[in-house]
Amino acid sequence: MTSGLPSAKLTNDKKRPFNITEGPSQERKLKAVVPSTPAKGNCKHYDKLGHTTDECWRKVGACLCCGSREHRIPECPLLKENERRPNVRPRKRLTLKRTGMIKSEVKSTLDARDGLIDTLRAQLAGTEAQLMEAREAVATLRAAQATLELADAAGASTIRNVPDPKVASLREQLVSAVARAETVEHDLAAQPGELQSAITQVALTGAEVTELTHQLSELHTQVSQHEADVTSSLLWVSHLRLRSRRFHPSPTEGGGGERRILNNDAPTAPVVT
Image 1 (cartoon, helix red, strand yellow):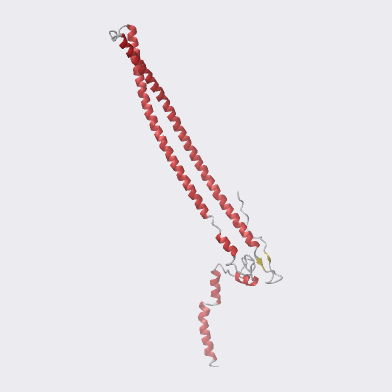
Image 2 (cartoon, one colour; image 1 turned 135 degrees about the horizontal axis):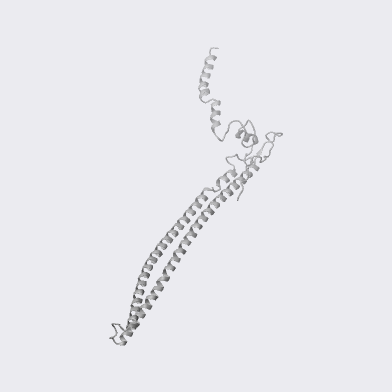
């Protein structure tokens, strides 16, 4: 009797730290935090009360994802196949990269257009200055020609004592100078209109480029949205495939029976525009 009490006391002393720090209740609390082994409640695979995923797998004896009896959920090839599928983010990054490249090209085009407009405006200013000088020269020559004609008509010209051939040559030179000045004036008068039309054309081209850039950005946005919709549709189809391959035990046959699960809680299919 006396020998049994100390042994029981020693056994209780040995079990006391285990019950305080490493007891079954403490282990349950720690396991409840882990996502892979949820607490007692609805099983996420068969929607049943009172068992975890591991207990459900032991009862069915097959993979809860595809129904195979050779592996469990972590080793399921369907899940590994889904992990190997490319993600949408690299495509979005590539689209943004292409958009940035196109925007940089458009920016360089717009800068070149602005430089061309500045050059044309400088040429227009120089042409207008030359046109003013040509008009002044034409006005001076016409005034000299009119004065010579009036002097000849009145008979009071200072060149009256000069021989006739020299007077004739001077008149011819004056007439030719007036004709050349009028030609230069006509050409210079046509250039400002051409330069102005060129400036207007370049400005209209720049406006078209800006509008096309805006439309291109909208198209990139629509393409990105379409890719996101297609990806969500693929995920929805993959979810339906996985759900269609799951099994759960029949209530009449216990753990040995199997039957397909209905997709009542399947997500709604996204609408692809």
